[in-house]
Image (tube, rainbow over all chains, first blue to last red):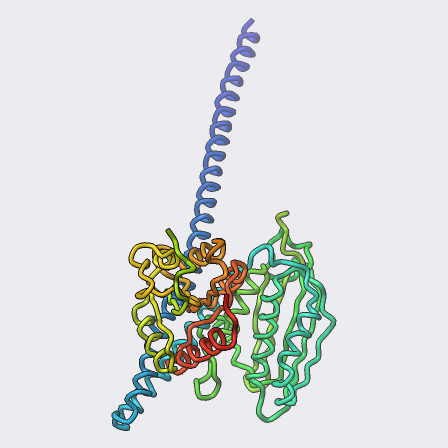
Length: 296
Length: 149
């Protein structure tokens, strides 16, 4: 009898204990799920906010550059008119001051135009994404640059390039900017040589693709030249807008080319990086996915 | 009622909301040796009223009917794009030549206005010299060389 009692008592205690433990587990589970839902909601809110901010930023750059153009055009037109109409009445010094003003306005216009171009570079609509034979795109760019290449006595070697999805105008601009840079920063003491290599790699080996893209194919294109190069210390800074490593008198330009390249590569879900050795040459490394329309 | 045929076609109608630009265009036209009468409106709404001879624009002497329109795109109330659409879809107005004169270098603006039937698209010159050159070429091409309806 006592044995039965003890067993029953034990069973009851076990029952209560399991109930308590399970209940606790269950509540913990509920709690975790609620937290997860919360995090997910927060994440979605953050993504929405980020998209909105990005859009606003793009609109800002666009509106700023558009609306800034107007008063600038007027300064330029009015000072032009002042110079033409009152040239004889103006003392020499006044004329020179006016000229300096006009030239500053000219620089400002170039900056704004570049900013406008930069803000446009990010606007890639899904309709413009199409299969691109990169050999064709590269040849178009090389034809455009043919005269400048000949002037520098430059030689270009291009590997066979693949067909990838992308926006034709954007990728063309990307190649154009990269090659123009090689031309611009060629070494005065030796003929320019540009080598363009291409290799197909897996997402896993890109160093930036997320895990779900590890089995996707990417192309790694390196544009290597024997120009003046740059100090590796600046390898990241050169992709920022209006960043320049040289004085205006040495090399012209506002420092927009590589910033546009980065924007184009980013919008194509790729990556761009640079390796430079001062005095020896620069190597630009562009990694782009074959496919753009993963979500479909 | 709207009277199109009675009106003497002899003005160049300029639609631009910017007072400086209107003045600058006027001086540039004068400097180019133009004898054409210039008429100005400040937005798309006024432009349509002018063309439909509404209100004060019924006065043919003061506001002669235009041979051609110079149209800015970004204007308040009714902008140049809307006004253009209205002109080019109106049976009586659509043959009137319209030349866009704007600061917008947007590819979409260029393509869309040509799709609407604009006759030419010009980006506002950034120097006064350029502006005088434009008014000269504009008149030579559109008023001397071209036959207009």
